[in-house]
Picture 1: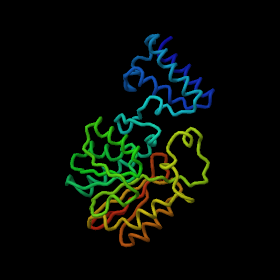
Picture 2: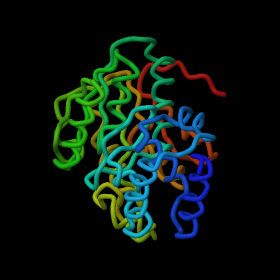
Picture 3: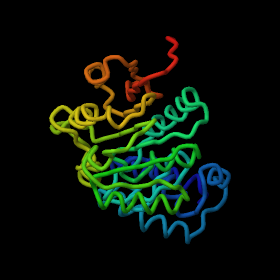
Length: 287
């Protein structure tokens, strides 16, 4: 059996068991130690018995034990970096990669290569903070989280990937008091408490990092209410949020930052996924 034939067979098995077929490539990349392009180049080669046996051992758990493939292999790729993940942190999503991409773009546009102080609140695995620090050396990044267990994972990722992020433990803005930032980013818990969530997510990923109060907006209110003392005169604020929360987000921005420009940015699927606030001296040009 070739690699391609094996992948097709396992993708069909996944779909027959109501599982995501994308897990097949992720698992095979992990077993083979190859990136997607290199694995693609092997598609016509005969797959080795050793690879098949290792794959099936983990894949069987994926099919029958209701665990995300990322937790089973212990890693998740984010922005080209392999992050350690486990049950103490959320699995990084591709939408959050878009948040990072937009922050890097806005940094170039508005700060022009200057050294800046950055905060990532509710950092989880550290994927946002560490990626920003890796991609832009002029960003001095501080990251915080209420979960000691999550910060243990984030620190391991920081060391593994050779970043220089400083981590603080505490509830919301509490550990940040007395500090000032040029860029503030947060992807806090934002799923409404009564929203139906897939069991693969709800039963495995930390609920502390998933649910954001009755309407999903609890933590945005807490952050925006107390954020201004933490910002320098010119600052960029960036949030990821639920795709249906554009109006609520912009209303909160207007309430707590009435003099500032705020915009909601769509993700690649055309959903209103990110809100940016431009504080202070930003030269804004309407599109």
